Structures are given as structure tokens and as C-alpha cells.
Image 1 (cartoon, rainbow, N blue to C red):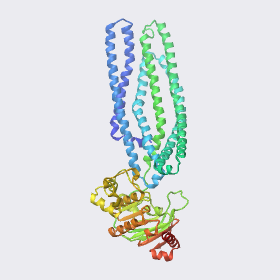
Image 2: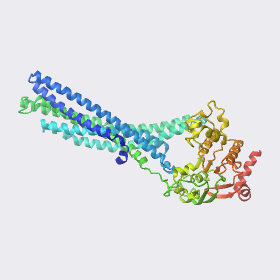
Image 3: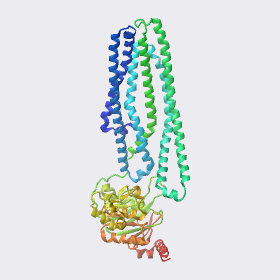
Length: 581
């Protein structure tokens, strides 16, 4: 886990190294201050020597100022290193997610990925800053202060050692109890983000069905679960403070008691025992030792909190896409011909049965093929194998006469445009959205594909026309308008294969016919696969495939299926009766 996360430090290694370097100088100067104070008391104040007071006082002031400067530089470099590390970490996670296949994405929920990119990265960032700063400062302070106190009185310096086992036991208990709770809290955060995202995206449905109270109670239930777990975890961690304070004050009391006896017995003569100045510096060193232990405990607590986050981040970083470029690394797609040879497909190895089974067919380049079937007949699963959104479990899928697994994935997907069943538009202008198909497209090219998709008619009615701003998710355009914009975006890629996955369901039959006519006449060499619910949308196709429960039930032209397919004939007649009525 540490090795994986450390890869994201990269250009911030220098700041990460300079932080403990400046911490070293800060600690060295801080440890010298109690010794200087002892000299000031014994050689200056007790002896009534004003010159010595001024000399040592000036040295003390200089040491304090240098310590302040070193601490400032350490803090500056620590902030630079931790924020830079977090930035790299977010970028690395995001870039790895972009390489995920649909199968990889299915392993993590969208809400979980968002939590890992935000809350989890912030936790790791805070822990990293504490590690490169306090985790170096505390041990150095502990060692230097202990050595200095041993030089003054090696017996009294051992008082705090008795409290180390107490601290160690309590810290172990805190770690073992709190980690489990924090792990559960961050998983619940995923669920919370999922509920919020679902509620916001489906706000229209929530209001239409008056389900605000239900959604509110669902949110409160999850929020209360987080509250309870966090409260319990924070209560356990809160024990750290009282335990540390107990050890600090007990050490101070014991040191003051034994130190006072030593001073009285020696008559405040450092040659015979312990002087007042030395007791003062010894108390200061003991405080530094115990405060360094307290710092370590704070670092320890932060590591406990961030450990669950670090594990979750590492899971995403170590997840590798199960779709990789083929060994042949072919970049040229000859044409839009498609073949399915003995294809079986299931979404996971643990699935009880195949989603698609025994799929065999061939489509010539430039043909228009309709795909019909009831809900759950795996129409979308079938076409998702062509651009390698998933890979076939058995058999092979060919485009241009070559197995899709031998192609460079980017080149294959550039040659296969898919208008998904769930149309997605992104925040930006209409031009910005259309240029997803080709970022270098001219305004004339954008207008042309919009005319092909019958989108120009409503775009011209907007005041800003093609510069009209589309809200996130396309909430300010209708379902039919969104579908036509998505078709235009797909056409902008000038694909060899165009897949329309039920992407004209929200447009009227007249517009649907116009779109099909434009596609047939304007891009005759592009292979067109049209998934539809209406027979009228595929009636004039060169070939129609009927899917039933993941199997090909029938295949042929409209006339052939009317004679040979009971399913097709039944759908056709039922839809015609509705139309006539």
C-alpha cells in the first residue's frame, strides 16, 4: 500500500525531504533553549551577573528566532509536499478510472469512486503532512531532549520511561478499536453519496410522486448511521488526550518532588547535586519528551483515520483494466463488416448463466441492421461487444474481418460510434457537446451532422443557436432533443459502424423516418445497427435480428420474418393495430 501511494509523490520529493531537514534544525535549536535557560538562572540571575544575563539572553533570542524561521520553512515545504501529493494522487486515480472497462467500473459504485477521490484523498493528504513533519519532529525531539536530560541527571531523566508502557498499551487499544469503525464509516459515506446523487438526478420523479418525505427519512437513516459510528470512533480516539495528560502531569509531579529534594540536599550547588537552573531545564526537557510522545500519538491517530482511506485508494490504483490493446496492435479498421462467431457472454465469472449464448451472424459493410427483442433480451449487451465495452466470454467478434481483441482499443472505438440507451450530454454549449465526436470540427461540419440528426430544426429556435449552453446532464433540453444531439455527436466521428441503441425512442415517427432516410442517403458506406422497440424503425433494414432471452430467435428481412417468425409477426401486428386505432 505504501509503495503504491509513494508513486504519486513524484516532483514533490524535494519538498518532502526539505521538510524533515528544517525540522531537524528547529528541534536542535529548541533543545538548546532549556540549557541556555539553566545557564541564565545559575550564572546570571543567581550570581547577580548582569553582563552574563544580557549575553545569554541575546543568544536565547537568536536561537528562538532561528527556530521560528526553521519551523516556518518546514511548515511551508510540508504544505507544498502534501497538497502536491494529494493533487497527483487524485490525477492518478482519475486517469486509472478512465482506463477501466465497464466490468472494472461495475466493481466500484460511482458514489464510492467520488468518495475515494475527495474525502479519502483529503484524509491521506493530512496524514502525509503530519508524517513528514510531526513524525520526524517528535522522534528527534525525543532523542535530543532525552540525551540532554541524561547529561544533567541520568536518574531523574528515567522517570518518564516508566510511563511508556502505559502509553503503548493505550495506543494499541485505540488503534485496534477505531480502525474498524473508520473503515465502516467510509463505506457508509459511499452509500450516502449514492443516495444523494440518486435523489438529485431523479428530483423530478421524487416531486412527481411526492416522495420527499421518504427520501428525507432514507437520508436521515444513513446520516445517523455515520453519526453513531463516527461518535463512537471519536470517543475512543478522545481517550488519547487524557492518557497523555495523565502521563505528563504525573511525570512533572514526580520530577518536581525528587528534584526539589536533590536541590535541598545539595544546597543548590551543582557541584554537589542539582541546581535550580538544572531542575528548570530538566523539567523543560521532560516536557519536550512527553510532548514529543503526544505528537507521535496525534500522528498515530491520524494514521488510524487515514489507513482505511489509504486502503480504499490503493484498491482503485491497483485495479487494472481487463481490456487491453491486442498483441497485434492493429490501428487500421478496413471496413464496417461485423461477424459474431459462437459468442457467449456473461458479465461476471460467478454469473449462473450466460447473458448471450450461441450468437452467430455476419453483417456486410454498409448494411443497415435492425435489432428487436423484449426487455431483458440482451440487445444492449450484444452491441456492447462490438466496440469492446465488454469482451466476449467465448467465441469472437470481428470488425473489418479482424478480431476486435487484436485492435488498438482507441482506434476501434473511433471507428465505432455508439449512441447509448441512456443519452448523456455534458455541461457546455451545443458546439462543445458535438465536438466530442471531433474536437477539430468546423462550424459547418457541426451544422451538417445536426441536419442529418434532424437537430437543426430546434437548435435554430434557440436565441444563441449552436452556442446555447447545455446544463449538466442536458436537463434544459427535452428527451427527443437530447437523443438527436447525441446522434449528431456520434456522426461527427465519421464512423465505419454506427450503433443506435434505442436512441430514437423519444422522437416522433416522422422525425424517426427522416433520421433513417438521412443516414441511408448521406452515409451509405457506414454499417448501421439500430436497436428499436418500434418495428417501423427497422422495417426497411437490410436485415433484422430478433433476440429472445439472449438467443437469436430469427434473422432476415421484414418479409422473411413476417413469414417465419411468430415473435416478429406478433409485434408487428400488435403495433399496427395500435396505429390503426
